[in-house]
Amino acid sequence: MYEAERRSRLLVVDDSALNISVLGEALVGDYDLTVAKSGEEALEILGGDNLPDLILLDIIMPGMDGFDVLRHIKEDDATKDIPVIFITAMTGEDDEAHGLAMGAVDYITKPFSIPIVKARVRTHVQLKRKSDMLQRLSDMDALTGIPNRRRFDEWYDKEWRRAMREGAAVSVIMMDIDYFKKYNDNYGHGEGDICLRTVAQALRGCLNRSTDMVARYGGEEFIAMLPATEGPGAAVMAETMRKAVLGLQLPHEFSECSEYVTISVGVATVMPAMGMSRDELVRTADEMLYKAKEAGRNRVER
Ligand code: GH3
Ligand code: MG
Ligand code: MG
Ligand code: MG
Image 1 (tube, rainbow, N blue to C red):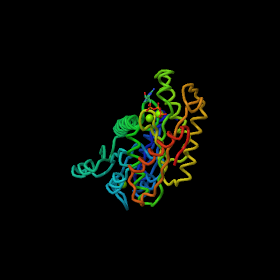
Image 2: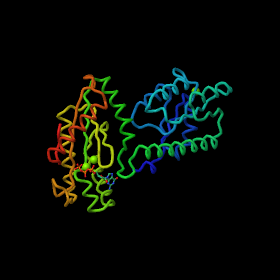
Image 3: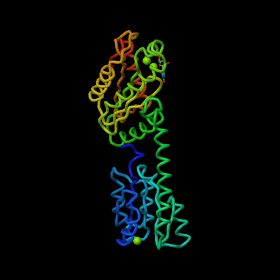
Image 4: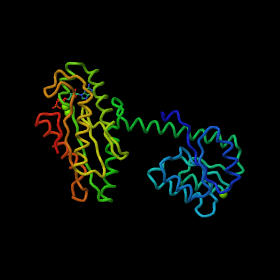
């Protein structure tokens, strides 16, 4: 389902069953609702995969209060951008200022008016959708629809640091389309663009773990990073990718290594603890790619 089509998800956090039922009744027609009866329960839900688009958060609750919950939300990269609206019986100006300063997008006091709650929720859900859309656009390469280099670098950085902590291997795969200049020169730039898009989608189709990523690295160059993957596993993936592109059987009469569009592939693997830097790992994969080109193209070197 396209993101734009799904209903927005709200998480309502309140220790009072009455508040939950009143808010629930007001919002259930327009949103997918999840309910938490304590701060602890809310954080448990927020530790999962199905994150809400907006959180309505009570402040006064036994155990962890709403301020504590918000602090945790803001400390976690996965949740820090989810808008939070406080909905509370704490009507003091200082409390409101404190809540907003902590990063809540809005502050509604009890007893609340249902139409006002609905209107404010709608406003913030719409803003969240727009910012999600901008985020997706800025992460994506417009021609091929796969992540762009900016997104790759950001993600690579994060996964690299995780690998350092966990002492896990990291593999990088560099790919480059063979004789692509000849492809453009003979079939035209428009066909070249279509070819790039088709190859990119095929490469993406090879991934099978949510932590793997393939991105467009430059003109007709692609890069993949496979966290927690050692040399042999990476070599298998590289070969799978090479075969996936060859298997598209996109005619390339002017290639000197095949009748079809092909890629050359370089693979490098490192344990971050070995002292190699992130950039050196990419450079090594690039050197292997160069070797694959030298050795005749349409092959994997590692
Ligand atoms: P090799 O086998 O050594 O990789 O040769 P090559 O011709 O693929 O390499 P070269 O680097 O000489 O040419 C890359 C070509 O990719 C040239 C450039 O016009 C083309 N290219 C880069 N970005 C795009 C793009 O967005 N669209 C199209 N159609 N072509 C592009
Ligand atoms: Mg309460
Ligand atoms: Mg190139
Ligand atoms: Mg090339």
